[in-house]
Structure formats: C-alpha cells, structure tokens
Image (cartoon, rainbow, N blue to C red; front, side, top):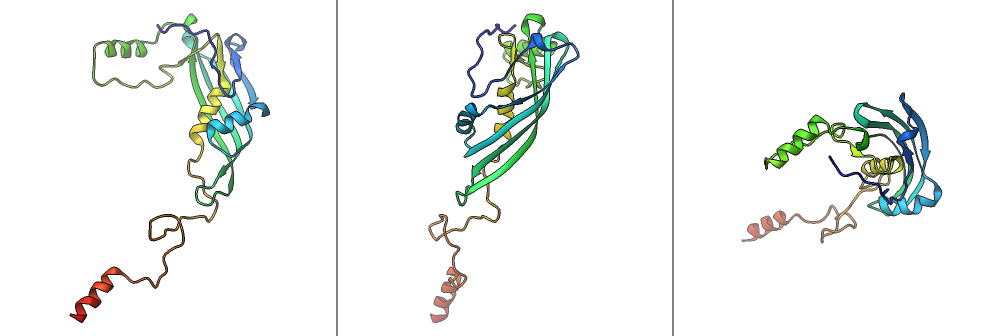
Length: 198
C-alpha cells in the first residue's frame, strides 16, 4: 500500500476540498481562479494573458474510499500567434475528470495489486491501468480541485495558435519571409537551355 502523504503540494492555483465535507450523495460546486494567481498560471501555461478560469465540479464518493471528480472548465485567454506574434483570443470549454483515493479508508484494488505483483516478477510489459483503477492519493485528507483543472487546461491549449488568415511564407534560405516570385526560373529549365545550346 502506498505510503500516506500529509504534506499538501505547492501549486500555482490550489482549491482544496476536504473529503470530510463530501456527503454520501456527492457534492456540486463552482470554483474560480483568483486574480492573485493569474500571473503564476500565465507563466506555467505559456500564454500571454488569462482573463478567467472557472469550473463546475461534481465530486462523488465511490466504494473503497474512492472519489470521482467530474465537470467542465471554461477559460478565456490570449496567446501570441506563432506566425505574426499578434494576440489571439480564445475560449476553451473542456471536460474535467479525476479519480482520488483515501488510503486510510480503502484496500488496494485487485487490478492495482495484480499490476504490482507482475512488476515484481520482472515482466517486460506491464499493462497501464486506467485512472479509475489506479486513482491518485488523497493528500492530507484533501483533493486539490484547482490543480486538477489546471492540468486539464494545459492539455487543451493550442500549442500553435494562429491569427485568422496568417500563414508562413519562405525565402530562398528556407526561413520565414516573402513567397518567391512566380517569374523565378525552374532549375530544370536552365538545364534544358544548356542542352539546346550544345
């Protein structure tokens, strides 16, 4: 069984939910990233600006001390166009999902126990468990909903934002620049002219 962790992580935006506050029929809440963490999130995410980040979350307790977190986040941000450097505004709405386990109140799942046993035998290929079969540990009796949302946001961000209509053109050296003129002579045409002269 994994060792219990008591020290809460230090993340850019943490919104901790105590599992003691989750009723047996579940909990629904909305969380919003405060303004005082936006600069840190901008650096982590590599965006130019983050206007807002919020999420509607449902937390449902499952058997064996497991908690299923699901919902949707919405983020409004600005990125730099990779072609022109101009600002590109975008709004992302994506699902959020995570599984967490309170090891103080649970027994290791059969699937996880079997994987650990196979790993101990030195098997070359070990099946990767679905997150629902291998949940993250609840740390200090709390789930960090803010960090879960930021992880999902970081995966949803377009790594190559383009301003509408922007596209690359290339110079003779292969770098960005103006497109070559249509009058440029094809090298095979020059070879044809040389043969004709001979």
